[in-house]
Amino acid sequence: MDPDNITPEENTTAADQPEAPATRYYGKAVALVAAAGAGHRLGADKPKAFVELGEHTILQHCLLNIAASGVFEEIVVMASFEMCSLAIDQSTALELDIPVKVYPGGVLRSDSVFEGIKRIMANDENDPVSIIAVHDAARCLTPPKLFADVVEKTRLLMTVNNPGAVIPALPVTDTIKMVDSVGNVIGTPDRSRLRAIQTPQAFDAKLLSKIHEQAAAEDINTTDDAALFERFGITVMTVEGDRRAFKITNPEDLALANIYMNQDEND
Ligand code: CTP
Ligand code: MG
Image 1 (cartoon, rainbow, N blue to C red):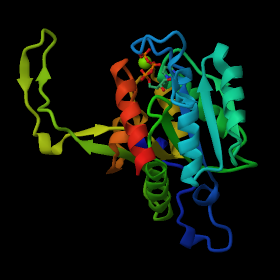
Image 2 (tube, rainbow, N blue to C red; image 1 turned 120 degrees about the vertical axis):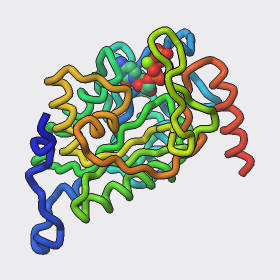
Image 3 (cartoon, rainbow, N blue to C red; image 1 turned 180 degrees about the vertical axis):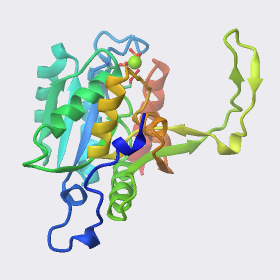
């Protein structure tokens, strides 16, 4: 793998081209929501994104928080094929002030994200996209500010010609150990250097697209998109994450989500 292949060819700063700035700095920011999972661990009678949490579904909470951030021109939702029409109905009902497009996802999360990137970049020449923020629908209580933080930092990095890749990180409170294949401890990393990583993860759209293409060609699958950047030797920066951006995974997580929602109402 040659990381140079991944570097976008439009490798100039805005200052180099004051008359005609490179569009990648000024194109639109799109939120890409991965909502095509089945939610097996949650064990509900419907896919996780469509489970109700108070007045809205998980997907609707997610869309409301993304729209409230004010940093996106568009939202693209990846849903399982059979849930696409319900996803459209639920987003239409919110009457958001930015467009929401819904497309069918794939078997793995990484397939859904890659498919979404292809959809978003399909019209890039006519309607340039500068930033894609990839987000798990299951992190539906992520506050609007966190979306703004990752997008604004990514845009700042791109204007000074650095690779735009910014992810939310929180310190871990447990001691984390490495184990071997039979569960015997083989090491204890220094906890002060460990971080739990969340979404939204914001990236230079063209770089993200190229990296996903290369990963697909080499059959590389990772649990998040930042890991692909790391594999290709590209710097990924962090911003401070937020506890409310936790991922609803198991049934008890719904109780935590309700606590956070009640807290927000009382603020
Ligand atoms: N996801 C997706 N496409 C897939 C699998 C997952 O878009 N093929 C999304 C999920 O909808 C979720 C996010 O990726 O918002 C994180 O995945 P996870 O928490 O594992 O959700 P599920 O895959 O739905 O849950 P489970 O693994 O328990 O079935
Ligand atoms: Mg899953």
